[in-house]
Image (cartoon, rainbow, N blue to C red; front, top):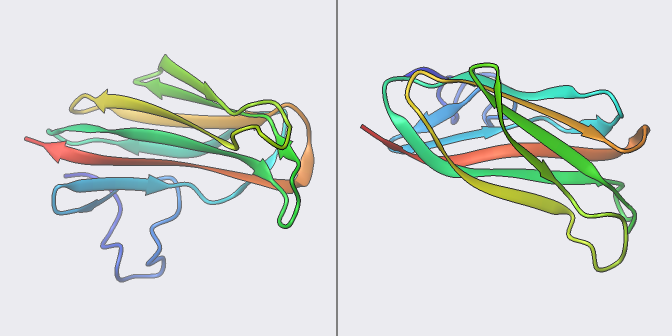
Length: 137
């Protein structure tokens, strides 16, 4: 399998970054926090191996700590340079969800690129993206 190193050792035991990590039959990728920005940033960028993965992409909206304001945030998912999904969070408001989720199957030998952006620039609004799935031979 391709992907990041052992998530319980090395210089980044939390597993954040742009790559995918494997633990047995489980796969995960957690982006680092990104600032709300109208220009897309790369949140995740990895290649899968010979197996396929069934899982969920989650986008967490740009939020300020101890604040209720939510920056509407968007996530574009590409497989081998082809856009397959766009996920968004709701418009700001006390009852708005601050995340968006999408179930998906990632085929074998796929390059996955996840780009995220917001509707406004605010370095205080931090979002992140993640993928969690199960690997099948």
